[in-house]
Image (cartoon, rainbow, N blue to C red):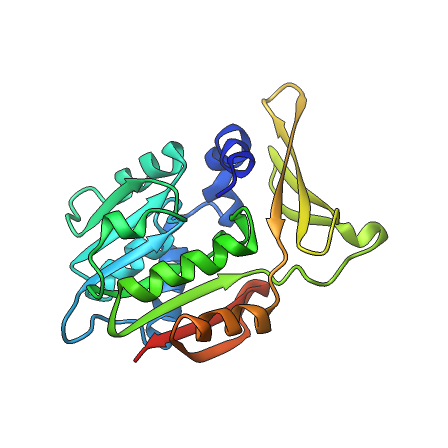
Length: 251
């Protein structure tokens, strides 16, 4: 993750992240459990280890534990979100919060060929600094996966350039909070995301603004990079909530 993205999460998004997703974690975990099961994510004959890259408050980590993984590494750069994850996983020793950069964590976290599943979901992949970082991360994932192990990536395909008022995207609004995104396109590989959060404290509204870059990743490009590191594509298609879903398997 870029330093700008990490700072943006700590200053603005992390403490509002679960609210952004709907406010309650349990239904989100249930939805993710259903999705991962549908995608064939389960322990292999040789491994019940999984890694959740960009785990946030635990949407996928809790789902992975529920699917039978006996060791789940939840990796994130946000101490705020990892603290929230720790609250949710109290009494679940299978889940281990890890404060690290998702780009470089795998070689030191797992041995080659010992991981049954790696998930990188919720637009996490687009937070990396460059497409070279994406390629390098996929190489680390391919090395970490056990035979038959799977990678799941969900992300927003931002390759289409929006114009005019279409660049204003409402995220969520409640009685005391309103979050809107605004997009700019500095080049072909990145989009600059501005988050505008308005919070009402019972007396007045205050505005909080921050920005960071996301990568514009085309589905065909990501599929080609997976094949290049030796992974076999099982799915690469639009999914729920406007997310592209990619599933790749290590033979």
